[in-house]
Structures are given as structure tokens and as C-alpha cells.
Image 1: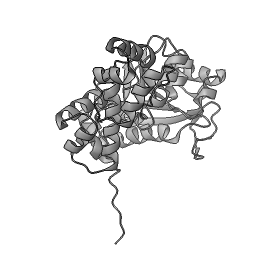
Image 2: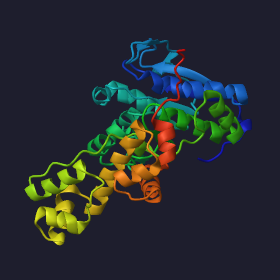
Image 3: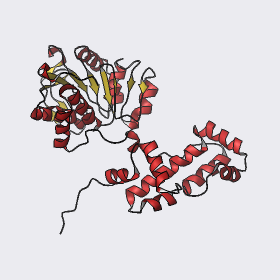
Image 4: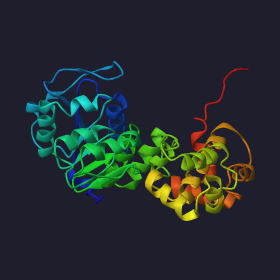
Length: 332
């Protein structure tokens, strides 16, 4: 992001809210910008709804609003468009999409949080742009809006004056990046420390995505191979072993994987093994050598390379960061 001189004065952040909005999509960015004011930032925030009335979030919390869309005057430095679980209904609301377009036209920068990207896409604001959204919805965004170049693993994506972020808490990451752009790294780092969050979290959304499931296939021979990999990830799953199991040639097995699974046999085996390793790291304290051996990676170094390549973090960092919140029992 291009830096903006900190001497430019107070910056206006407008957050567009609507019935059914996800609460953290709204409050996460608000906390970042208001916290920045304690460390040298200069932000003024306003919540805007279609008619200026309060809205009820998806969590049932009521949010007070500062103005209606048609009461907004001047130019906002940042427009935040959050998402909500009812995004599929919202993208059919022409009046709401008109409000998004109006606010976007009056803003220097438009930022979406989570499924807020669907609102931007439905309003035509992401056509020809790179964008991201929650990993669970990335395929749907690409399917519904083919003019958008979806980057499913990114925490946030900047393309011109539009920035989109991944699921829920990624709005905090995006907002910290904007604070750094506006007022420098020292202010942003102070906010991150105050909020006890990463200044820049390791890895991408692949860390959080659901476990891949064995793909559907009508080919009995391939089904036997897929089942064998899923049942025993640490077993011998070389191409020749798969061919023997399927009673087919190695070339035929490779072609079946290409046609039915969409990846090479080796890539599929690595994916299944990686998921098995993730499960072990989340649920136990086995040494890395044991995890690597049982899941078929052989050595901790091979396990580490696969984690870094596919998830963007080391196995140790994954175990430390995603097995537990770090909460300690207060009993006794």
C-alpha cells in the first residue's frame, strides 16, 4: 500500500451497516482505528445505514447509527463494507447495492470484510479486480462473479482503490495495514500490541480451511486407491503402488487422477498426509518425528517443507497457534 503522509489531518472512516451484518466485521475495524488514535493516529468514524436507523446484527446486538446514506457529506478516506451470513439475500437487494455504489463513489478507499466482498462484487466494484473473501465462500464468489479474480488464500488483497479481506477477524489485519499506510509502522505496531494481535499473521487462509474430503468418482479402481490413501496416509502410496492396487498401468492411474481428482497422484497423497499431520498436531503431543513417520512424510524436515509450502507456517507454529487459545484453567 502506498504510504500517506501522517500530517494530512483527520481521516474519516465510514462503516456501512445493515440488518444482519456480522458484528465482528464492524467492531474489529472500529477497534483498530479508534485504538490508533491513542498512539498518534487521527481518525473520525461514522456508522451509516440506509435510512439512518439502528440495525440489528446477526448476533442480535443493536447498533446505533450516525447518519443515513443520503446524509453523508464530503469524502470518506475509507469506506468499510462488512459482511453477514445473509450475503446471498443481500446481493439481490438493489437498493442496498445502490447505497454501496454511492458510498464508494464518495470514498478514497473502499474496503470489504469477509462476505462484504459479495456486496462489492454484486455492485460491480470488483469487475476485473483481484479480491478475496472468507475461505469457505471463495469458490462461490468466483462462480457467481467470473469477472472477479479471486485469491482464496490471501488474508487481504489490494487492487487499486479497493481492498478486500478474508473472514471476520481478517478485517483487523486489513485495518492495521491501512493504519500503517496512513500513519506509519510504529503506530500500527502499537495498535497490534495493544490489541494483542499479529501485526502480520503468518500464513494464509489455508491454515483455517476445512479438511479436504475424498473426491467423488464413479471409477471403482480409483475409488480403491483413494480409500487406501485416506485409511492409511503413512503407507506406501507411490505411483507404482497405486497402479498395483488399481490393477492399472501407472499412466492410466495418472490420467484418472487428472480427470477425476484434478491433481497429480503425488499431490493428492501429500494433501491427505498433510491433513493427517494437522489432525495429529491439533489433538496430541507426539514429537515431530513421530508425526512425520505416521503420516508418511518420513522426516520432520519433509513435514516442515510441506507445511510451509501448503499452509505458510511450520508444524511447530501451527501446533502453537491453532491447537489451543492458550487459556489456562483457573481451578485449584
